Length: 354
Image (cartoon, helix red, strand yellow):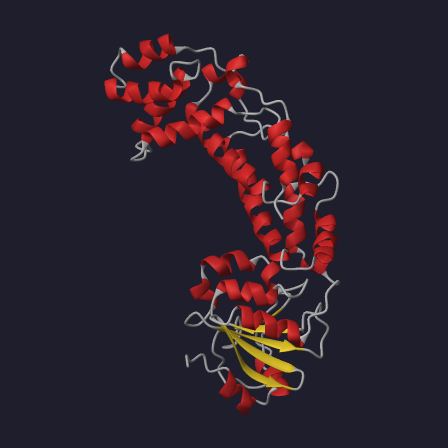
C-alpha cells in the first residue's frame, strides 16, 4: 500500500528550485577560478562537471562535490552517474520536505555535511513513499523540520525501523490493517513514538483469529522453507528454515515475536537465532491467537537431561525457547513435558535435515 498521498505532495508542493533563490548564486566562472584554472580538476573532470550542469548556477557546487569526493576517495567508478544524482537532488530540492540545515547559504556550507544530508534525505523520502497516506497527514511537523547530516541519519534509522514493521502488517485484511495504522499514525505523532509503538506489541492485540487452515495456507505458500513435523489435537509444530518464513508465520497474529526488538537483528544474523538455519514453531490452538502462549519458537537444541523445575535462569536451556511476547522460557522442559511428553519432544525437535 504505497503512500501515493506523499508522492502527490512531493509533486504538487511548490518545488523551490535552488537556482531561483539565494541558495546558489555561483556560476561557471567561479568554478573555473577555483577548480579548473588551478588544476584541482583537470580537463576531463571539468568536462564531466560541464556535461551535467551545462554551465548553470549549480556548476560550482557540483565541482565542490566532485573535488571533495575525489579527495576523500569516495568517488565511484561512474562519476557522471554519481554527480548526476547529486545534481538532480539539488535542482529538485523542496525546502518543505525534510529540509537540510545550512542549505540556505550553500556558499558557506560544509560540502561534507550537505552531501551526507542529501544522501540520508533521499533514503528517508524513499521510505516515506512506502508509508500509508495517513503518515503524511499526521507527520507534517516532522517532515518540515530542518536537520543536518547526522540528524538525518538518526531519523533515517528510525524511519527504516518503522517501515520494516509496517511491512509485517500488510498481510492482514484491509480492515485490520487500517485499525493498526490508525493506532500508529495519530495526529502529531513522532517517529520516536512510532518506534515505541511497534516495540510495544501489546498495542497490536486483537482483531484476527488465527485458525488451523490459516496456518496451513501459510505453510503451503512457504513450502520451500516450512514443514509441519507434528500435529496432534490442538498442537502443531512447524519447522521453519528462513527468517522471512518465520516472519510470515509469526505475522498471522497481531501480537507476535516478529514485532519485537529482536527481529531486526534476527533477520540480519539468522545464524545466531537458529541452528543450521532451522527453528521450530509450536502452535497451540487451544490458546487465543493474541495470547503470548499461542506460539513458541525453539531456536536451539535442548538439553534433555536438565532437571524439571530448574529455576536457574542461566541454565543450559535458557535463551532457547521464546513465546510470542519475545520472552524466553528459562525452564522449558516442564513446558515440553506438559505439551508433548519429553520422549515425544526428543523425537520432534531433532534439528536434523531430512
